[in-house]
Image (cartoon, rainbow, N blue to C red; front, top):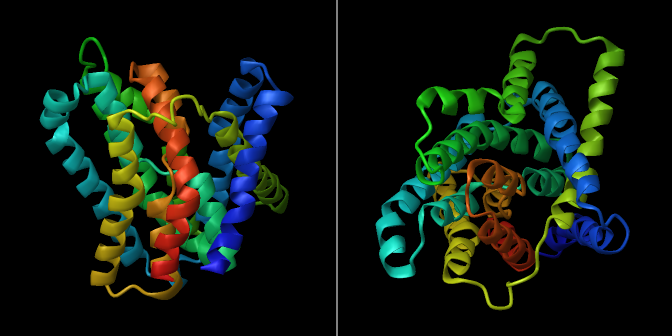
Length: 308
């Protein structure tokens, strides 16, 4: 447990630093919006391409790790959809608010997961986290965009518009490119490899600073029922489902610990961007993200420590 806490400490210190920079040094919204776009469209795709193309996937149980996380996310999505009528009737959660509950329950903060996996297990942790990227990122983006198009938009988006939105997602394309290079083993010029690797390394610290800058602590002392529900689904139930499925597949050691890590991280901050773009309840999602990030300091070591 102490090793897990030590691995988490620099990650959450970077998030705290981002929060402080946003309040006391880089106060203008446009500064962080520009940095956010840089991470989302350039730095993080470079990290995905580099990680996936270089990962020794033969050394890890790709099928078991990927399927454990894939099934856990699918089950969580189905549970949220099944709960929607009850949430509307009992808690007054409308369509836009439901999309925030949905995104907050199954998206994952890849920057945090990758940083912790690397701190704990080095190259093996990066390879395992890369498997998680392939299993979760395309799936989560497809489901979240579809749910937002269905429940948040004043008018339902046509399937053509949904598909175009997905095709514009840089993270999905980065996964595809990284896997293609890994499978085909195409030669990459050393200079180009160094260029992409440098961009990717810059993404982790920068991305965590952006996560901290995006935290909104207003309202977390008296969180809404929808916020508390989403925090429980993401930080407690989703890791429990992922770990349970992984145990059924006989995973153990670092393999199981990284499954626990990737399933127990807070929801991704880019969910907030998507909510703003597609009509979701962005203030509710900001509240969810803030509370999840704070409570994950406690819940993540428990989940990873249990699995390790």
